[in-house]
Image (cartoon, rainbow, N blue to C red; front, top):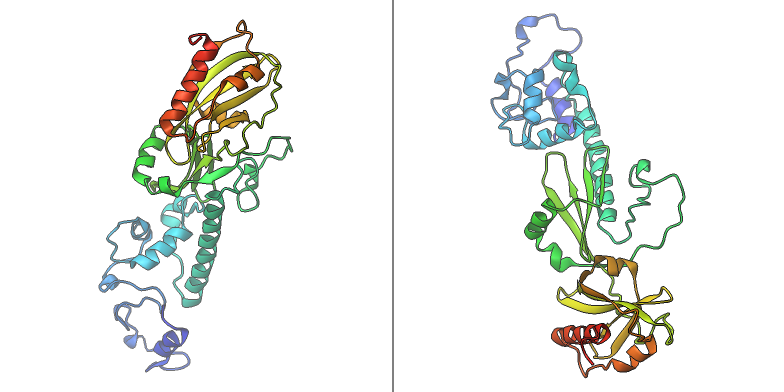
Length: 341
């Protein structure tokens, strides 16, 4: 961008001071300096041959246009200012007058657009972090995103960042194209903010107007197997009334099997093998059970097996591999289903 003194010097060199009524020296077709328009905007060489009327101005703002009127930097500036989601000036038709291109005016526009770009980036950074809560988006987002009714709700499940999956952007876009978002909001500039949930994974993406879907973060539900073996609200005398064999995808990406046990007291727990080989009993996290795939279920109200008896019958291993975890869960299911003596 040309400095203010350059434009001033250009206006003062060789020009009469005061009122000049000699119009013979006033030539609109003369170019004082190639590549500079009004001391601020840069125009491609030869642009003086093109009229900057309404149609030419709007065509010049289209991305990818081979404009002979505006260079790319200035095209981006005015495209941001006249964003169709924020500006209705296109509806003025032939009455629209292209904006002033004075140095101070364009400099002010550039400062404003930089501030807007910074605010947009802050929004994306927060949206792509584990701190973002869909029901309480916060002050960075439109107030309509946050419900005015304060409703009691359970704390969101802890999320674990999955940068390894973020690298598979192409694969994720293919998956998300056939998945309905569980969260979809649009800001005033037309940017869409979306959250997709599939299995134990959560992907977050944004999409600019007429732009492609950009995946910015992938999370998985926090590992619910981190509690110590035997940690459960189940009492030893409760009867096991239902059992389900389930599988989920662990944060490492491998399939992980576990047994879902329900009792006559209405309590439930998940049973599986920890990497150390110890048997794990954990309280059932609703989010985890809802996202896991149920392979088979069995009602065992008549079996008479208690939680204490089931605990005593399950033996751990020296070290749990993926295959040994699967065999452990299958054997426990069959034992409760009565297929194994």
